[in-house]
Length: 428
Image (cartoon, rainbow, N blue to C red; front, side, top):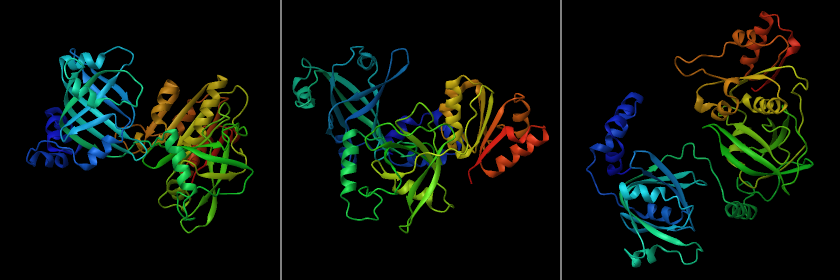
């Protein structure tokens, strides 16, 4: 972080928030450094030159922020000197919100993202707009002759500060060309033990799958999308189903691990699983995180289901603990499609640790009840209270650690709920 960036960004109210949250001392060290003019080094220049898009923020005359995505060929945003950037502004939807904002307030913020490598560069600066009349020579310098889009103007930015942000929570995303290149490189890798070697499929099942998507859901949970090699239709999987996948451990041994599918009926072109990285586990989850990449090929058996969802119209109570949300989420989706009433109770350490927490809150609103065991003054899951409010004919599904299942079954017994109404799957 440049000291100039901290001087601009760390206002009095920001400092107060840092003090309250315990980070003021660490960030305060930047303010003790001599104030230097920000200047891009080789790393920043190379990073900027490789970008094919970025996000920019401006401020309106009424004080409202506005964020816009700008895109073009790689290198369309250019480093003119150590403190100056510029880019050709192509014709778009002709709303001219950013242009209008800059005419009244020249302050601008840029976010440059590198999703595959989980990196981002934040830039604060002051912008001026040029055109053919005001500065034709500079506008020509910003143009990209090989890119077939009409240039309306140029934007030149004098940099006031910049900061490399941490990679935490940046989900790796890849373009089609990047995926094709990675698969090509991995299949030609000479080292058979290399995590990137994708030429030889793992497993010997009848169903050929390829990893086509990887997303970081929480610091320890990663989701993987699996599709047929021809991207065709996959064998159907009902809510509660799981697949058994092959995993190569650090010593070269290939073992199998079972993971619940988070996609039920209606998603016949993709299977999605979520894997919690267990530091003290048997090595399988760590191996998945470390070796599975876009293009990894697997041979597995079709899905199995030992935790099926009831097919009638009785209501349901869905209870998940930690990574146990995986089959429970698929059940919620299936029940919603069938218009069957349900409640979803989800317990985790903190919101950050809970996969899909934000999305579940949006999708199920009043039917969703989260619990945070490591957040002070926040309610914890009360097994008796949850089951007491359940309808007399509700079917109860519990998935998570053994302690959660024991607590729910004990509560059901205490309330006189028939054991067969409580269905569970243990993740240990």
